[in-house]
Image 1 (cartoon, helix red, strand yellow):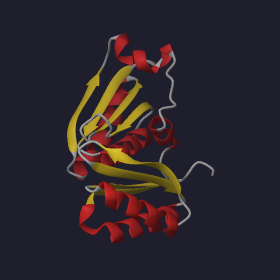
Image 2 (image 1 turned 90 degrees about the vertical axis):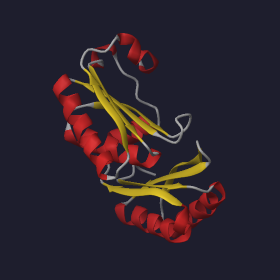
Image 3 (image 1 turned 135 degrees about the vertical axis):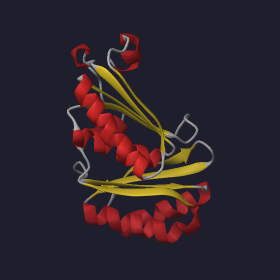
Length: 186
């Protein structure tokens, strides 16, 4: 499947219901399963990609089936390409790319996807890591780099997206980070 144009996610409070909802979503529309796994605190996360209409149809089917097990959900039409690379942990930074460091932390794995997309669309930043929920107590984490002004703009856009959902934990911009903060990504 080509790079999806839309991304959708459901975060559920029940692991068993997660399997049922995942099955329902995959049968409802032609979507690509990007992530489906248990996450911290006994939850289940499903992330799909595809055309805007297919992703919306699959998410709608999942929401209908999941009922009260929904913790968070979202659909991002025309998602920024940087989200897929960072989510897939396939971004390798070159030393010359290390600039200011921006960090956005959210209360859910789903909301960090919206924050990362907003940041990538708002500024010339490199989104190099999107970490959803595993080993984070169910939280989401987005890391970006670029010029100080671009990172500030990207973080602000991402913060606005997370805050709109009521799921922002913390954000920061480190203008001149120690190179060791990037060690795992070079």
